[in-house]
Amino acid sequence: MRIEQSFTVGAPPDRVWSLIRDPQVMVGCVPGCDGIEQIDETSYTAQVTVSVGPIKARFNLVIEITEEQAPTFIRTESRGEEGSRASMVKSVNEMRLAPVDDGTEVSYSADVEISGRLGRYGAGMMKKIATKLAGKFEESFRTLAEAPEEVVG
Amino acid sequence: MTTKTQDVTVTVNGAARTLACAGTTTLLTVLRDDLLLTGAKRGCNQGVCGACTVLIDGRPMRSCLTLAANLDGAEVTTVEGLAPRGELTRVQESLLKQNAVQCGFCTSGMVMVAHDLLQRSPDPDVEEVRDALSGNLCRCSGYRALVDAVIDAATGGAA
Amino acid sequence: MMAATFHKPATVDDAVRVLTDAGEGGRPISGGATLVAMMNAKLVEPDVLVSLSAIAELKDFGRAPDGTVRIGAMRRHRETAFESDLAGGQAVVAKAASQIANPPVRNMGTIGGSISFADPAADYPPALVAADATIEIAGPDGRRFVPAEEFFLGWYETAVEPGEIVTAVLLPPAPDRAVGHYEKLCRVAGDFALASVALVLALDGAGTVTHLRLAVGGCGGGPVRCPEAEALVVGAVPSAERIAALAERLVEDLDPVDDSRGSAEYRLQIVPRLIAKAFEEALTEMEPAR
Ligand SMILES: Cc1cc2nc3c(=O)[nH]c(=O)nc-3n(C[C@H](O)[C@H](O)[C@H](O)COP(=O)(O)OP(=O)(O)OC[C@H]3O[C@@H](n4cnc5c(N)ncnc54)[C@H](O)[C@@H]3O)c2cc1C
Ligand code: FES
Ligand code: FES
View 1: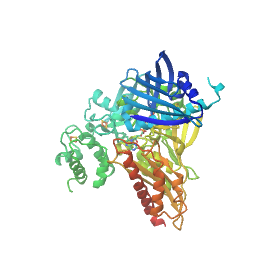
View 2: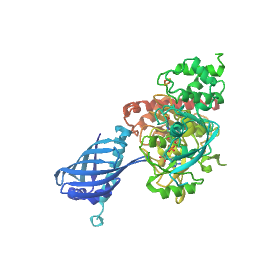
View 3: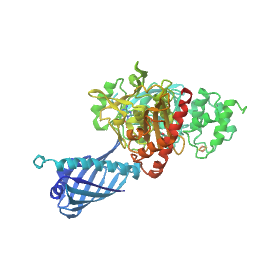
View 4: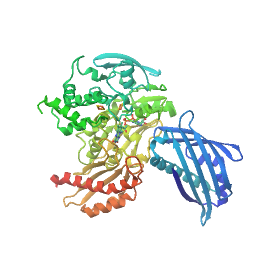
């Protein structure tokens, strides 16, 4: 399934870029994320819980930065499993930043494959749920990026 | 109330049984594996097919979706408990007569919902019968014969 | 299968306490028609199950002197479907209940369980929005009340927080002479809706619409209501053209999925017809009174 969204943030690309590259900022903005650790220059691990109704799937993700052109483009690949369960998630994500009059336009796309417990909901439903989570990310990220700089961190 | 297994007392086909069951054990599992009452079938284990239907406190329900631990004090009737051993109910006799039993996997569930219908509505019309059977699937697709059989049972063969 | 601890408290306070203590692994269980199916499929494995079956208060149905109806969370779909006291506009809820699944599932499932699970294609949610219901929720800090329109947050998410349980659904009295109707389209009898329309409608003596609340189910994360679309009919005679205009405006707000039951496109096409049919049925039901 493919998710594509774009939104505008009232902050310049340099600042948006530095926030996106800050794992602690991402922990706060990615819904259900409660930890990111850097493994080396380009790889991270993260714990993300995706809740759909009473199902709470907790994924241990490995995220690899496969291409990066500061401050305009980043491509990552992530894959993860849910403990001992047969749930798997894989995604290829791209994010582009472009300066616009009142800040930065952030466009991103994700090609996501889900199997296992959450896969039972079907691709149509998972796409709606993923889009909703993306909306929550946007909201938190925008709030943070548009806050006066000294408040952040 | 906080151990991993519960002792529950359930009246099954008229006899009180005390069962030790885990919090997640379903009535269907208890019936089939512990009490060896295999009339209720495990089709889908999802509530969809109706093969596991039994009467709980006089109402047809899915035994696969019912936790045994929740049934303390309840009364359960399975297909084995509808008529004395060796005898058949009117519904069962009509099912045979109308050739409404093919592989038989759905039959006990059908018998339970039809039995319940005739208890509440002794003279149902075809629509009522179809509604009563609507939650029970027959993979051999004998629906027509099934509906005829229930009408036959209601009318005592007069229709 | 993993063992779960099973509790069957006798009061709402005890249920909330056990659930709160259990934290993430705790789950209330009402009819079990959805939860046990998910447990059987190993989609959820609760550590602590809190049965609401022994809480007398949750099983009650009652009407207050002002006409407000209180449906306890543990009322089965069958009981609500046959509730003779749900008449006029409030009948929309009974009509929705009567179209859920099949008789054995209606003997098991509860209104509290259904709205807490909040399947986007479930039957109660649009009916409760049309009836302007309020959901009563109990938690560690006591009871709170959430309008149905703010309860369903979309795609299986509700206003219920961890440690809370739904205790009742409250239906305000509908206007005099109002009629409630529920129109559901499904592939086979007893299936979840492809799409559904719930409405509560009242006309004055001249045939002008004095009250209208309409909600669509199965076409978004939760029930979809569009007051702007309703306004195209309120204050006027409900002609076919006005109803079509309402439907056209409302369809803009829908967000259906493609799934095994039907495509999103198909759903968008049938909703205007379901709306027209729902009006037709409601107006026919009013006929003798007018
Ligand atoms: C074959 C089949 C067909 C169906 N068809 C339809 C249909 O056409 N239309 C329709 O609307 N529904 C349908 N359903 C769903 C049915 O209505 C369920 O009974 C209902 O959704 C869940 O109710 P329950 O009481 O069984 O809840 P449970 O299964 O006990 O619980 C469901 C979820 O809600 C939580 N919960 C339960 N009670 C509360 C509470 N009081 N407060 C907070 N959380 C609570 C549980 O922890 C669980 O996560 C169908 C179900 C089956 C099995
Ligand atoms: S096994 Fe219970 S309904 Fe299919
Ligand atoms: S007789 Fe075979 S399933 Fe019904």
